[in-house]
Image 1 (cartoon, rainbow, N blue to C red):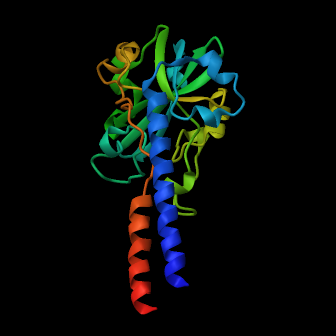
Image 2 (cartoon, one colour; image 1 turned 180 degrees about the vertical axis):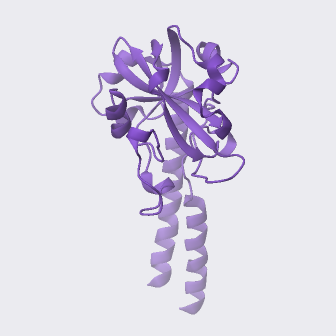
Image 3 (tube, helix red, strand yellow; image 1 turned 45 degrees about the vertical axis):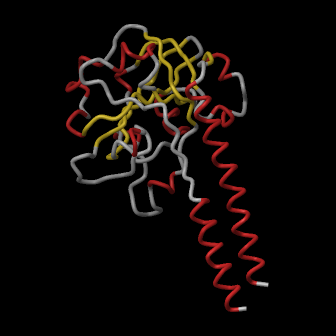
Length: 233
């Protein structure tokens, strides 16, 4: 009986592996494909279906309302949003979330990561664009708080002091009077060059999808247990 169960679990993980690979490919295609207008994206009630979708918007940044998320690392393989919490390492820094006033309403834009010494906007004044801009970003719906903030181990977000440790989209939107809409500014699109290539500009996200995918290792583990169980039984 045990070998049958472990073999079934191993096969199930292979099925999940294929599902996850398709999910990643689909998300990457949405991120690197033709961006859809913000007006179109906000009309769909289920925002989760847009995850990683490239979206274009026009507006003006509200630098006076920017949010600092951190301390965090830059993230693996250039994923400027996937970094974990840090406390004292040299690679620690902050992600800069800046409200963008658009014809469809105020939204949030994650402009990217800056080292801790550039948290103060005055240290990157050359990148604080004052005129209207066109941006292309990946649509995001927040993050799993437990992934980065272990329960009772880290302080909760403190909007009044602009101290943020996790991406709570609803709270960030309420704090800035924005719609619960978040775009990760992308480093690749030419439309963003006027923003991302300014001196001191935050390091924007590269067009890469990083989703946890452990199904192959799980499948190998269960397959190994099947062989062990077969020998025992």
